[in-house]
Structure formats: structure tokens, C-alpha cells
Length: 326
Image (spheres, rainbow, N blue to C red):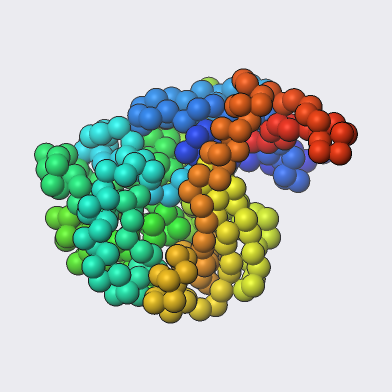
């Protein structure tokens, strides 16, 4: 009987980092979920431990590793690949003033990038660093999004996916490359941003030592977690819609065309490339939907467990996390 493939998935989320092993049919063989560390070394250690734990439960290592995760969160790396700061989080508002300055020509910025200026964007964070920590920006050899940084630690190669690059606010959505003029606002060059790789294009082979996982296993950056989830759910044709709920919530509609900048700004929507790069994904959402649910569960089910509560009609209802959710 032929040996079935076993695939590892890593999701570097805002609240939790999840690692799971899945068979060819998509069934979860093993999974580990833990709070996302705030520092890159701790994040890499957590991922490595979780991969080893899943390998132990599954009885063998995976045939490939895919990494998805939050988009705007990242870290500046020095010439040796070491972090110069803790992770700079997408929900950190420190760059509010810088984002306001970028918004002065909002329509032109949207036409180029498909995005509006906001404090979560890496470009706004880089402008903040230039004004407040110029030594950090001066020492930055590379910027790495959180999934990129994990892949770099596992392979020694720095790459990103277009769905992550597009969230920098310094990516030309039409030309599908970083915009040198936007980067120059922060004193950066295109060479300091990771080149893009396709969603099924390996970054490189595993070179880090991970318990139970063979060296040489291909490692892939699958893309932005919302984009990966919607693609896996079958949202691949124009008009298809996905509602992806993590810490933040994104409602995503696939389209053959990009919206008019003025209309999009008025509606509060942004655009991303589709996972395969062939179409546009129109995105609207809320930044704290999942966090609010976690907060509510903490009130009614301390410790993350589930409880049975009375429904309005007197019947019992179940409130808690779905068993087996990765």
C-alpha cells in the first residue's frame, strides 16, 4: 500500500500560532495551538516545538511545510538575519501620524497600491522608525513579515508571497512589484524587501533542526492567512465570497477588475491580489471580531472550555470553540 502524503500547515496568527499535520484528504492528524509570542526568537522556537510535537503524535514528519499568517506584522532584520526589534504588530497604532501624512493624496495612493493609508501598514511603521528610531532603520538589511521570518529561520532563505507584499503599502498592484518612490519616503530600497514567490513555490528546503522532521523537506510561504483560508474554501471565481474570521474578520469577494479609488475609499474597502495572482480580491472587514468572541468566551467559559447555557427558548445551547479547530 502506497504511503500517503502528510502535509504540515503553520498559521502565524495575531492571537495564536497553530501547527497541524494533515493527510491527503485534509483530515487533521495532529495539531498544536499556542499563544503567539511577541518576539521573533520565541516565535521560531514555538513553531519548531509544535512541529516536533505534531511529528511525534503522527509517528512521522511531513512531506512538505506550508506557512500562512497575519499580513502587516513583521520585523526588521540586520545583515546577519537577526531581529532589530520585537515584532511590529499590525494593530500597534504608533504610526497614526505617519499614516495621516500618507493619506494626503489618498486617491493616487489607492490607485497605485489598492490600499488606503493606515497605521497598521509597514510603510507607516517604517516612517515612524525613521523619525523615532533611525538607528534601527539604518541597520535594517531586510524587512520580513511574520510568515517570511519563520520560513527564513527554517530554510535560511528570505522570500514572501504577493498577498503579504501587497499589504506593505509600498507595492504597485498593477506592476506587481515594490514601488521605489514609496519606499524612498522611508529611506528604503527595493533590495531591502523580500522577493515574492508563488503560493506553491518552495522558499527552500528545511535546514533547521526540527525534532522528527527530515532535513530537505520543502518549505512554502502559502500567503496571507485570510487569502489562504478563502482559497482553500473554494473561493476562486469572480463573485465568490468568503467571510474569514480570525482575530480580525475579512469579507472577501473575487473580482476581475479593481474598484474605482474614490468609490473604494468611500466604502472603506481595499484590494489584494488573489492567491494565484490572476485576479483581484475586494476586501472589507472588522479588526476585532474574533478578538471580541474570544473575550466573550473568556467571560462565559474561563480557561477556553465550553459551557452549556440556556437558550432563549429554554433549551440548552453549546457555546465554545469547535473541537478539532486548528
